[in-house]
Image 1 (tube, rainbow, N blue to C red):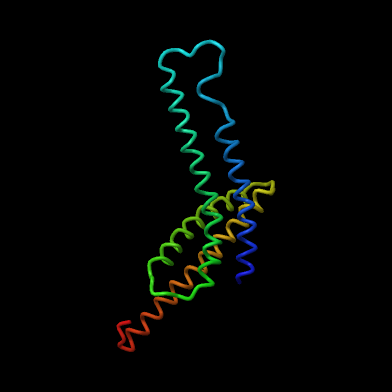
Image 2 (image 1 turned 180 degrees about the horizontal axis):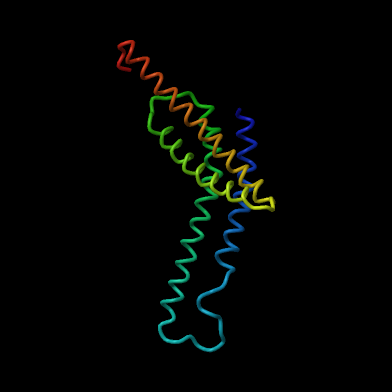
Length: 161
């Protein structure tokens, strides 16, 4: 299972690099609100230039967040699957919630791509990212579920910890 996770992590890392490049092109190479001209800009245009810049930075921040999540979830799944289950309960539950959110986002993208007639490389990329998020979710859910079962067994036995 760890070899599958390693392979998915490498593929997701390559896709994340492509996602960051594509996001940069989409956000910063598009049409600008303030046209470039040789004449001096009118008074008050500095405000609109700053507004456009921060709008672009926030939009690219979403692309960075998507790329970071699609890489980190499978990598954390590999790291967490190799460690013994500890007494920290919150970590795996939080990670399973975050990977579930990413799984919903990428499943939405996968369904959108499947509904289109032309299946191209984007379908392959979204499928790989979907599989990476699913791998992370399964690892985190299994670890959290094991802890819940262990606590239930201790409660039945009468041992507080």
